[in-house]
Length: 130
Length: 366
Figure (tube, one colour):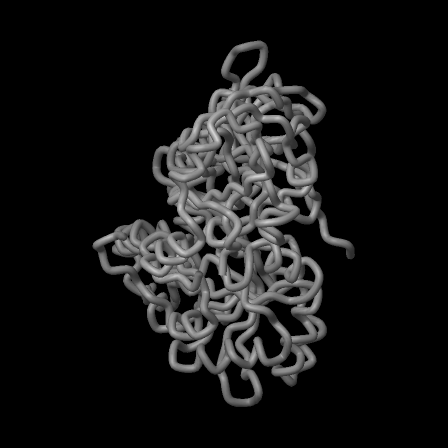
């Protein structure tokens, strides 16, 4: 079950709104598909990210994958704990494994993301337990 | 999804029952991981892991001319190994290029087992057939599909094996030795003290029909199933070479650092003339190990750079779980190959600092 207060992209990122900003990470399904995560490349603080565009990279033992931002705005914080210990993304993708915090430039665009029910349904099509 | 039919090892069903994540490798449908690459890696470093390596090519070469044929095809002197001994060696082409790296096991006088890389099984098979024409008393049998091969690796590998093998040899076998054994008095196996993990361990060749029983015995006695993902991270840490990464037919043994395998005094062998000439050339590039100074994951084919100039290329690289570092191997211009030399790795357009370090990256405690 994916957390109901989060919003999701079809690329398996999530956003959790906290007032005028959003915390961003990847989903449990994403970390499971990637396998052991060994490196994350996150934007510097102050960089502007755009909804559905690439904002960084995440690397597992076997492969490199792009990270796509669920929201637009300015990066105000990156998760140093994850940079130092990327396996946190595997262990706690929705909590301590968050990636960046973004000051939202257009909070209305959160409505373009999937709810947890919609995301669970997408995963069910992939044949995965949500 | 690939449309071609992949080979399945005799343990394929066992992997599915263990819910392994499967991956295509060299035409085989193989387990990439069971629970996680890093967890499996750590198991082999601290306890015991069992790997299905049945995809490796296996040839039995027998007869009164078996030794003569192998002496012609391998660059090393195989008269140095007697019954119960094994040798790491190379097959080279006439032009000195490496056709494959192999392990040769002498099971009895005139009875050898040759194990080659899965990607090269067909090439090696053709090569053996071609050269065997002059050796009518050497018989070659491809036993790759009639047998399974299981690698049992790690500091507890001995305990696991000794629990199913009632023989004093279980305690006394030295590295690079082999024997024909009976496990639990009923499963015949070739047991060899070889491996590809940087740990102590064994490789077992068992008849196809008994392989599931032997696999399950090993797991029942405490070995954890490990996939090709961990096999690769383990061999990288131990800086063991992988055909298709650190070497291929465009490399000669001297570039790869395997010149000492070549036995000039044994007489003629395929590639000798070319290798004699190549030996006199100083290689322009050498294989080195490096570690990242700035954080980043080096991977195969990434350029190695110094002062804005390309000086080499990464052949293998990644995260080394036992060291908590990012390491790699690669070819580098020989003047920059000494440990301590600085370089940069071009990681998808980003130049990140690294330095040459001695190999291996990881050495087990003895």
